[in-house]
Image (tube, rainbow, N blue to C red; front, side):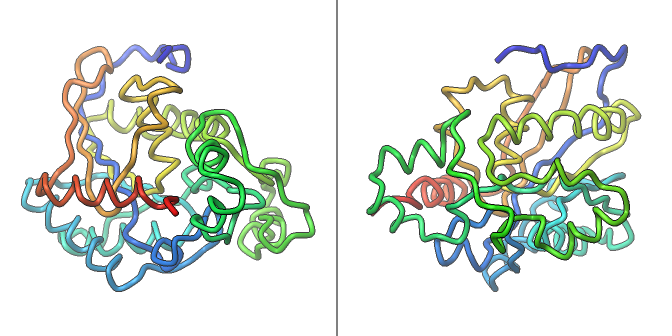
Length: 265
């Protein structure tokens, strides 16, 4: 992947970064396109979040900064994981740019039923392609962020409503996630802070593209398991020097396979 996104900061990044996908949500369990819809964790998701915290504690990790999306499944995952780390008091910043991808007119629909109706190829294009978004929703649709009290409140505080999507592809998510990383996270890492980012499948896939140099074609094959911490360390020129998932490799592989099979009929 091109490095054209990179800001030419004159610093290395000496802190460590952990990316964590939230634990299983109620709509994950139902196999629905969730997107920006705010749903809670399932009991399994709670266990996954706590296990992530235990895994990070066993790895000797300690965080100086934390970030989540505005969605409660990510917020709760971070809270539970940090409790297991004994870091309940860590201030965790919330930012809409870490939100999941908005799935447009697919949001709330069953993935297997979408596959049965539109075919596996079209469904996979909507789910996994880099630059093809699902059909957008109307502004009057309850699933549009303009009708969500959270974003209505933000607009009242000066947030630009034009930023709220009616649909998104991964390219759109990359365009909001990368500036967030460069403005907020990169300077923290450069300040020798260890940073935890708890987010979603697609906002983290965007970060994977950016940090790991994954191409638009290759990212279609990347599946991110829920509740599994991914640890990054960096070299003197901001390059990734090491990256790995933390935890039992067999369990991680099984969880990853589960994500890849969500749209299978």
